[in-house]
Length: 463
Image 1 (cartoon, rainbow, N blue to C red):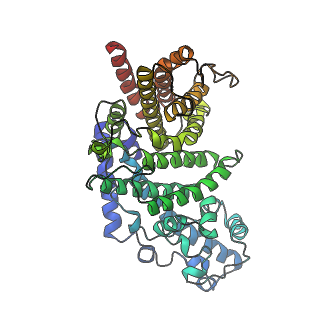
Image 2 (cartoon, helix red, strand yellow):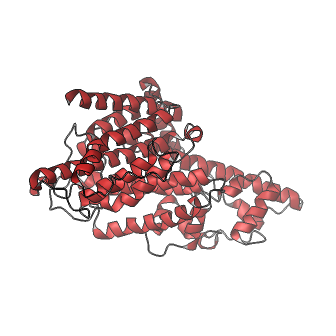
Image 3 (tube, helix red, strand yellow):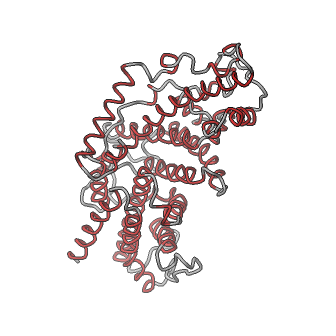
């Protein structure tokens, strides 16, 4: 199914979509999404009373295999929800499943799943939970992780508070995949809110960059992002971790989530649904370059240029980190990047490209109006200089010597700055092409490179 989604073959994509539908229908038909219905004994390995016969080694082996069977099913279902949310998101297709359907506890620590034998498994369990024996009861409050981990929905709700429980935080730290799933659920929530928001009657603009949600909802999402962000930051600082690259993926997913809050998906608000992932990404690229007008529903009430890029100011630091992460990897490792990571990264790059384009337009408008550069603290200058600084650090000219700094950055000299202003978008376009060239295994890179070449050649011909 993954191959069919991310290849550029339209027939394979259609087959993958049918397979996903069949899987989801089968899960619903047999009640597999509810843990107590599908596997009533899924927690038996926690209780002494479940294993009363046999030697100690036999009992330990039985518990280990019981855990492995339950965790296999849990990870399979969470993977299905993850893929359902990510597979056709770029073509603006709604997920077939809701996280509220999934009545399974969130996955246990990755180290338990990776244990090679029961002895390693029990040792890691004791180290993680701080117990010497299984003495839990069949009560959510007295299980090893408590109520906060009872399902994906409850875990997400718990993270949307100022003081999430220790159980849920330690569960995320112990499993980068669980963090994937929580971030995916938050992304799905944002998209659902956006769909509702753009069907409501027009209202005056909310200056808050997270403009889709109410203030209380914004606070809840901010808390979730902050709580998860702390964990991800700690994990990405430990480069020796065996899951380092998975945590780097979570870092990109957090930026992608912030982008969704601040800059709604153009396909979504434009009401466009494509028939394949590649087609959806191509359409998003064309929309980002201004080939379609997709504006906020409140736009007729305010000047069109008002606050066009204001929300990006809240993301400048995240964009710089994302660019460093996307272009800072060894090209040999990038080749094997997961396709959903490539899709998320490409979406971030499109948002940066659009922000640069808007900032460039605003600076040109200011120069034409006042015959002078805007002041350095103005939003358009802050955005342009910050994003160009990160772009130049990632470009081929400086990738081997980070000490090189373009003297035109943050310059108040109009003549010097104007040359960088004229080159800015083409420099970033070349950076995105480099991104696509490095990711040639799946159909995403070559397909988007062809779209970018078509766009840039068309611009060059027009000029």
